Amino acid sequence: MTTNSNIDDGVTLDYHVERFEAAPLSLGEGARLRSGTILYAGSRIGASFQTGHNVIVREECDIADDVAIWSNTVIDYGVKIGRDVKIHTNCYIAQHTIIEDGAFLAPGVSIANDLYPGSDRSAELMTGPVIGAGAQVGVGVTILPYVKIGAGAMIGSGSVVTRDIPAGMVAIGNPARPTKPVSELKPIDDRIEPDEVRRVDLDTETLS
Image 1: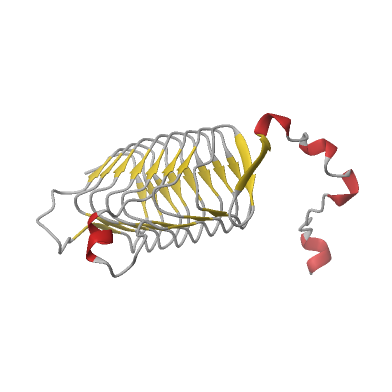
Image 2: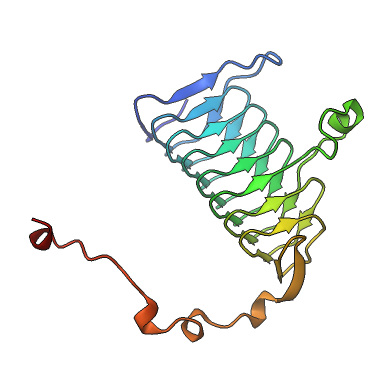
């Protein structure tokens, strides 16, 4: 199925699909899969795929090369993910979501795909959002169905995205509203004083 890969014990490949008779999982070479990962049959995953622990990728997903999905994240069925996408921990990616090349999702992003849960008609029309190429989605953001986040947009932490966000714009709030172009953000060195940068120096001698 795959070559030059590093796959932990406790990884499940080709998990059985109950909804239909699925084709075997297609997994590219050079994968790094950590324990607890479950990849369902019926998905196509490109080269150099990486997972943290306890990642689930359901059936009918199409994932390009060089994608990383970190611990405790669920990719539901029918999701399309482009190249070089990074999805951090504790995210839920709903069915039929599209994430384009180079996008980044921070921890705790939740995506919805059903306007009226429990409605048969809503289930027929169910679809997730489109997250454009190079977009950055902050910690704890919620994205509702049918929304399009434009290429290179940046969504502030904790925002709820209920409407389309134009390409290259910063959006914040509940509901999220565009505030300025990403190009107008201050450089990080202008926002943080040197004495605000704190790192832990693990000196074994001081810990003994």
